[in-house]
Image 1 (cartoon, rainbow, N blue to C red):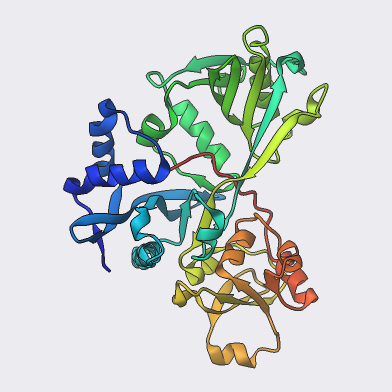
Image 2 (image 1 turned 90 degrees about the horizontal axis):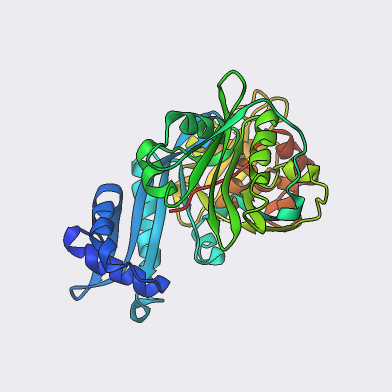
Amino acid sequence: MKVVQLGKEWFKEATKLSEYAFIYKVPEADLEENYRNMEKHHQVFGIIEKEKLAAKFHFLTHEVYFGREKLKMGGLAGVATYPEYRRQGHVREMLSFVLEKMKKENMTVSMLHPFNVSFYRKYGWELFSSRQKTTVPASDFKIQRQVSGTIKRFDKETHNEDIERIYDQFASNFTGMLVRDREWWMRAIYDEETTAVYYDETGQPQGYILYQFKDKKLMVDEFVPLNTEARHGLWNFICQHDSMVTEAVMDTHEGEPLFFLLPEPRLKSERKPYFMARIIDAEAFLEAYEFLKGAEVLIHVTDPHAEWNNGSYLISKDGTAKRLSDQEALESDRKGVDLSINSLAAILFGYKSPSALAQLGLAEGDAEEIRQLERTLPEHTPYFYDFF
């Protein structure tokens, strides 16, 4: 079987396959816009059997923040196969194809939203971020601290650079956040949402919430404060809706401290693993990674679906990492820590610690070397607000 790029003449069939596999329907009035979006923003690849589309996926190119750095990222979406073609290796063939493609195009990381986590784990993708939804009843809408700034509301038509600058500054505090351009804001972020921006008394934008109303609920899709003042200012704005809604449902990262302040912090909160990441080029990723100085540790990486990643890498006391030859690895006086490409991503993104993975048998090595690996890692907080 051969993976081929699908031209415009296949977009209708690709859409039908998505509708069948994911059990939804694109409204007739939206089909042409859907096809234009595929042509402009996606590369669509598939496998054709006897002139019929058997399987396909969509490929998107983006960048993600890794702290202050930006990494090229290949996004996968809409991976689907008709049931009569399943369990015949079609998806395996497509994923092998796209891994090679991303390696050739110098992408260091890939991301996707899984329909099934265990399926993509087999191919080297691993969970790297979770999302937390917290429900705050309107009876708890109590202002905790008055602030001197003001709130201004914007919608899709009045969206401006202040909002984008706040997001960029916020996103650079995390590993994995999508780099958004104006087009992405217009196409993928806004629908019926409103953005409320907090400005301090000097007129500087310091935070925003992206929200909408649904079934008498205030749905806070993004809560993005840059500092303590903005956090209070945005919360105070939420509190002003106490007569309009029964509750607020807030989507935040796990470390958001706001809820600790509330009169009754024992709230309904759901933490759910969300997006998956895969390291495409382990050598390039490790060489660019800023390890903490002081410890030296050897790691052995295995990757059955991207064999170029297989090998041993030395993290030196100066905080740099390099690949060792097989002979250099054999001559090392260290046994090293064995990691799959999945575990490497979970560790480097900051989603799981080496010691936590060691308890699961997913990081194998001497206990002291596991601790040494942990000492090399900066404190990263992974997060992802977007969807594709």
